Image 1 (spheres, rainbow, N blue to C red):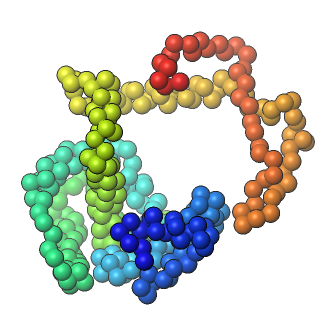
Image 2: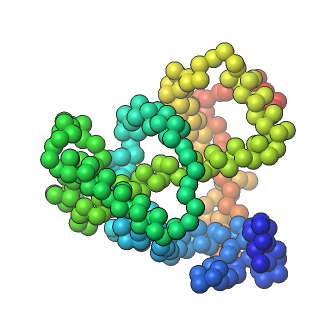
Length: 305
């Protein structure tokens, strides 16, 4: 029924049955949302109700019974894991400290890319879990025995997880080895899957549309050039400069209601529907504060205006 291009087929079905419809894909009941208004219901208005991912066979075998960050149910346990990963693994300083390791692993990965095996997906997932579990057990044992030579103030993510497992200081849930292995697997999967998949699709689309590829190449030649370094040494300073400029703009403007309206004139009446939007749109006007003057003419070319 869905054919070779399922999103086109689903779009045709939505034109007949509406923006929210339920299908059964084999044994799996599936809700299909086809408009931005309906998507807002699921992803914004009632997002907490739909925040948990469905339990699937892969998460049971490869994420230790869905106890990692990626597949555990939304709640106190998931929030604690998210906080832990954000503080101890995903901070800017931690990410930057892993740059040499990332470069080395990319080189090794490119050398060893090979074709995947054919069939027996469940068996392969179980075998992969055994191999991965043995590897993670060895790494965790090394950390517990102190054979990694880590200094106290240079703990890596696994060492931090183990210390939290032993102390459980300030967290609502108790971590054990299985939880730690599930978190590590999720971090590895997220690092390899999310960005890589998007880049693969983007490159595939560029190859399918050569005229778009030519525009991208021309843009790179015009903006980057062919004789410059591939990494800009001043990128960090440039990003900081952008933040400071935006922060300065925030201080330069006052936000006021349009057409001389006062806060008493705001109509907060809601329009009935699946989503309840306000009837009149709420608008704010930015007025330049006294003492500030900008001459922006000539700052941007016509192509960016």
